[in-house]
Amino acid sequence: MSPEEVVARLRSGMTIGIGGWGSRRKPMALVRALLRSDITDLTVVSYGGPDVGMLAAAGRIRKLVAAFVTLDSIPLEPHFRAARQRGAFELMEVDEAMFMWGLHAAANRLPFLPVRAGLGSDVMRVNPELRTVVSPYEDGETFVAMPALRLDAALVHVNRADRAGNGQYLGPDPYFDDLFCEAADTAYVSCERIVDPADGFGKDVVPQSLLVKRHAVTGVVETPNGAHGTSCAPDYDRDEAFQKLYATTPWPDFAARFLPRDGDEKQYQSAVQAWREEQK
Image 1 (cartoon, rainbow, N blue to C red):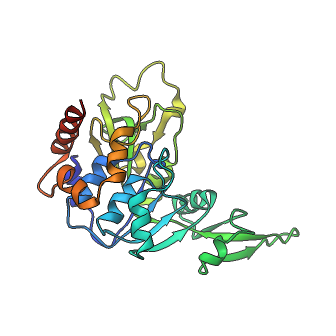
Image 2 (cartoon, rainbow, N blue to C red):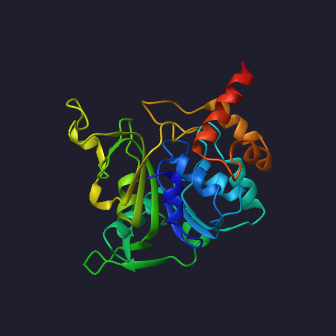
């Protein structure tokens, strides 16, 4: 598929899960295609980075479910912060482990899972809708009942994939991309390169790197440099200079140059290259 074909299957009001972590291996080509569409009123579920910042700046988010929103080398995503400070959307902020178990619950088609994370913290105060459950066994321990983070669609990015939807990561961390896909009704995987199933993923690749399984994937998109300006190790690092530009530029100016509504991913990559030439 193309990024535009993926977005054509999405609708306003959906709950969209976005894989990756902070400013690392985010499916930015798919996010950029989403930004060029008219889709809005989204519930976004993400270990947030510039994906959340851009969607928040563009006014596309109705509700955000997140454990954090960071650019990593820039601790707090500035466009997210500005949108949150003006009350632009509803926020469900939970502990990182609670978030993970919410995805596990959805992947296993359970309404919730009991977790210890969140107890003794302000998570329960700022999320009054959360409930606790008591173990039915003799221990009688109290747990947070973390609700399932069920998704209408998931967007993730990996290093390699085949046309059947099997996805491979080559970097140091799988993050939770497999859970995002399994927690969703539909899942779209962008990748740096599609490999031929006849050739396989390489004889020197450990099976554990085959993270995303085809049974949980709806479509595959080949998007070289598709995670830019987040990292996609070992293919490329985070574009720190470009990230700084993004973080310090008013959103309308940034969007006008890099994300015009009549553009596409090729136009974006060309605009980034032109900016790099200017810096020289």
